Amino acid sequence: MMSNEKIEYAGDDLSMYAERHTTTPQVRILSQNFEIPQLGCDRRIWIYLPTNYELSQQHYPVIYMQDGQNLFDEFTASYAEWHVDEIMESLPPNEQCIIVGIDHAGENRITEYNPFDSEHGKGKGNDYTDFLAQTLKPFVDSNYRTRPQPQYTAIAGSSMGGLITMFAALKYPQVFGHAGVFSPAFWIAPQIYEAALNTPLPPGARFYFVCGDAESETMVSDVQAMAAIIRDKNISDDNCPVTIIEGAGHDEQQWQHDFWAFYEWLKSSF
Image 1 (cartoon, rainbow, N blue to C red):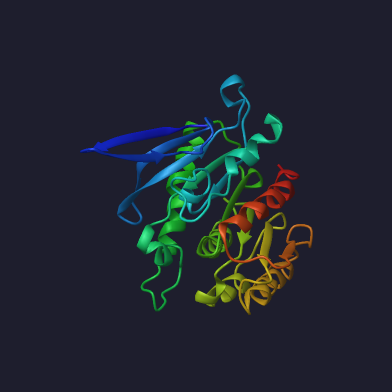
Image 2: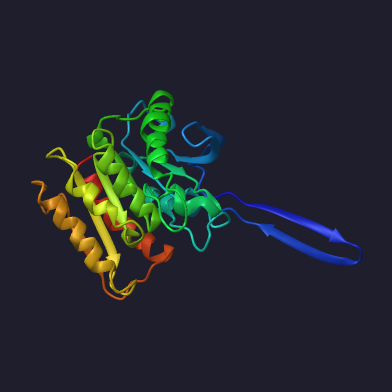
């Protein structure tokens, strides 16, 4: 666990500012300013490496996750962190995987995670998913010991991150073989249902849907409607489960708990 404390003195007054990071040593910053040519900007990218990564020649599955600020570090999290690194390290090393976290775009998060135009502005999600599939994943596969096939590659996210995760899995099923769709913001982009209806999927495609029944009036029905579309493509219930958490709201603490169950489902096929 990393800790960095800064102490400043102002005249006779003592002011203490504690910058406490909660990442485990297996979390690295892949880049502070990784170029996103599709969007003409750059972004911080995190990477979690399994605890035995440096001690073996093993190749690992990879999960690409949105909202990287919230995954590993309490200091950078908007509200609360998901504790993804601690969850990984609670498992035997041979059951861990590489996790890549992509920071969101701050005030532009809504448009970057939306593949469609909305009242919030022009959607940039199409370009963002191109970045994930065409730029970031090839870089990770070239620089780390990954298992690059779609059956060993997952994508996951919550809320707007769940929306763009869904879109990425539809647009690039030959890249992302598994999708963890947490409390997706389908309400902001109803076009996602038509995209799902019109997209053929390979038989092995896998989608994990989860939400709480206290999030909104339409969250449960939105998720169930999308799952029905996916199952109609000859995707089995086991490969397209829907989990509804009684009393759960729309927040990072809930998604931390959801990640446990998602990963149990996911690693069974890795």
